[in-house]
Image (cartoon, rainbow, N blue to C red; front, side, top):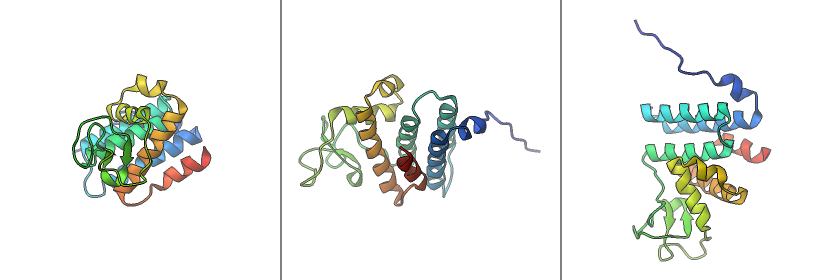
Length: 173
């Protein structure tokens, strides 16, 4: 005989707020895409932790989503390079981020015309990846928005198709 036991119920808190609901939908959709072949316990625990944080209102919805997306991608083998050039491996403070090249890249590897990324945005991406919530929660709105755009582009590029729920978040903001 097998039985299941609920570790937590977050549905009521999540559906009571549209922003929280659409954020949770984007997380679940991403988890579904990443786990089409085989779900891992780490992916499951990451998703449950993110949903719990959303339900409790511990951090902004978008920051929870961005941290979840970066970590979920990393667990699936697509960790963005954030400390060294994703192309040549040179360590340093690089100020270009290209999803198609795998993260931050140095000025030598960045294609001509690539937009620069502010240092605080790259620091925010690192904080999101590491779950440094004090840093994340204290970040100014422009930094949060810039990092969020890069996270969405990165996740959707590697998933090879859009995350439908993200468009609902963007259109509601």
